[in-house]
Image 1 (cartoon, rainbow, N blue to C red):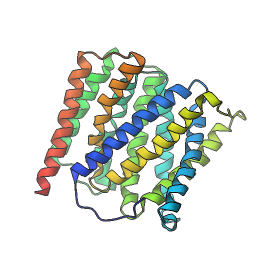
Image 2: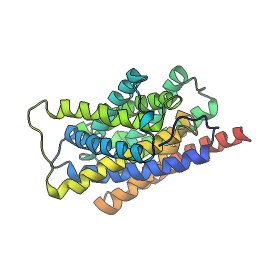
Image 3: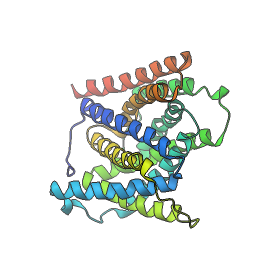
Image 4: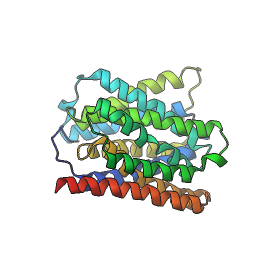
Length: 294
């Protein structure tokens, strides 16, 4: 796990890391849906964090990066992880109620929130090209989601709100990645969210112990979730937050394909048109950032 370094703006490297994040997030989504019939969202987050702590400490030990773990900027770590914990719980709640592609579409309003917040917290300019790229992508999301035909149910509301939590987490991660190593960020991610999970899961005095049948799914959620965050944190070292969140659109067609193959969640013309717009905005963003490097 890397120590903080100063990287030049490199959209292609960022895109490759975000592809890894997309595959990891999709694996976590499938496993999360499969275990949601036995565990509630707080329990899923708690067990995921327990697995994450073991993985982070093991990797840090063998990569000789344990010394990078420190208590600097704990306040920002807390804000990041509380924001992410809230968004991720809403995400796990929604995943059992609405199609995978629809959840991804709602989640991808995150770039809009990042674009609005980044100038205030990250000193990143909201250029006309960035705004156009995000607007094109968001228009595609609306076509995929078809808000006029979707009933306002708890799953839909949770999917809409989770994007705000993820945007706050992304902003805080970008701030942390300037001075804090990936090992340190991942350590506090798992530890703090384990604490949040214990408090929330145990609030009603009834914590479910996962049975043998779902243990593989619990492990996949823990491992894939941590790997996704490692890829995301690394990608943020190569490109601004607004660019990263736009590249993340690649997860939408991946999730849609998985939903179709595993759960018979069929696509329609609106989805295809929306996906093309999403990729159009994504391409515009990467192309423009690439030109700035030349």
